[in-house]
Figure 1 (cartoon, rainbow, N blue to C red):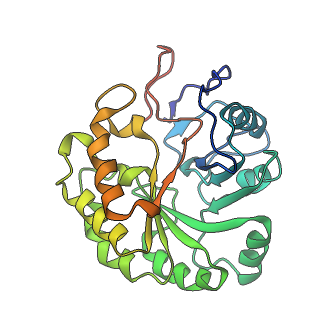
Figure 2: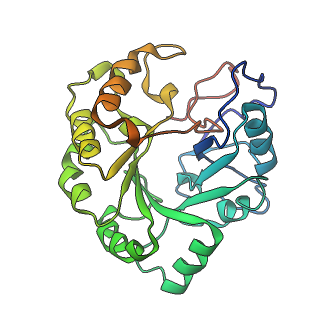
Length: 263
């Protein structure tokens, strides 16, 4: 049975330091209304509704001018919720979709016109598009200037980034890695997956999202045990790092005892 996540906060304080003009949140999701958008049967968690209007309010308080909506695992390859959300968040928006390799060219063209700019793969999730299709679709989206985005999820203790390093390096499009590669902070910067991430970033075709620190850290905010990882990435290629809030924080083990942990 899917685990229930806590809802997003609706009363965030305005930060004392405003974001610079043109600031972009590169990683958010929306959910609901559940009556209009059906979650995938393969989902591992249930999320209370986190609507585009709620997201817009949070972005306004943070001073974020632009946003990238990322297709979450909870909707599988049904992209309708986030395609619609691009028109509903009240600011310039782009989207990363989840697609099968046989998606017709006219559909790809229509999504590009709507604002889609990449395809997301989620490792080890039952509802995700198969990773074996990634090189095939990468060849097809090259003409659109899209990128491949990768979320390392529920890897079962393996080292997927190290195992996939050569495949990712050979793709004909740029690659974006979610959430610092979903590393384990306790394993240190010498862990195989993070070293593979550094090599990929150093080659100049891979970007890394500095996001979801709450998933990776063994400490409380500001997650100081992640600093060595970010510093190593800065030294490797400072221009290839992106920031995302990961709103609405579906895997956050928060303060309300009525909600369980999702991952």
